[in-house]
Image (tube, rainbow, N blue to C red; front, side, top):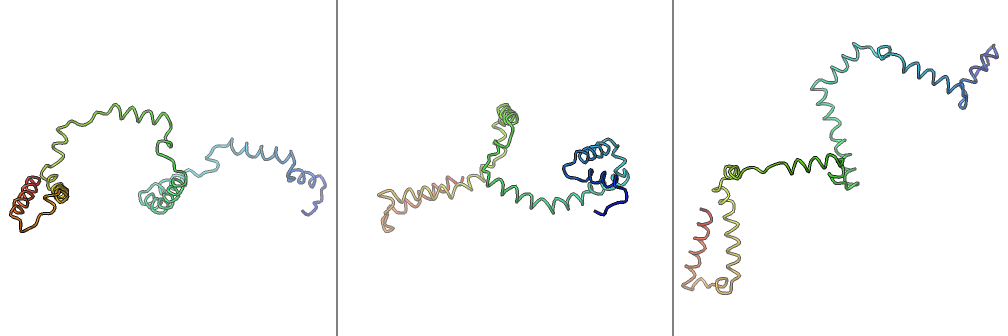
Length: 172
């Protein structure tokens, strides 16, 4: 620092710029207190702030921010979650877990009639029929008599017809 003409000014500047100076610390406290005591309008132009907030809250701007930042944030979250091996319950405060338990306990199941209208029995039969047929045929093939039927045996047709009847009964 270049020496000033007045030695008193040099002493004051030196005292205010020294790292361990109590005067420097007190001067910083005064500046910060003064700044914090002033109204926000002294630091922020209201019209500019409103324009900035309006621009930021537009749907396109929010969508753009989400598109830009959400994938990276999700990857970070997944990476941290895998390392932590934390359960969902551990992330919730005890009061929230208790409230969830109460809500589940208070919730009544839907009436049985609802299920009757929600499921089409014909579609369920159509879905389950091939599975049941395979299970029954696999079981029948393991039986000592039926599993080793010679096609030339006269009873082979009866067994095949029985398999067809079972399949038809399941499909109905």
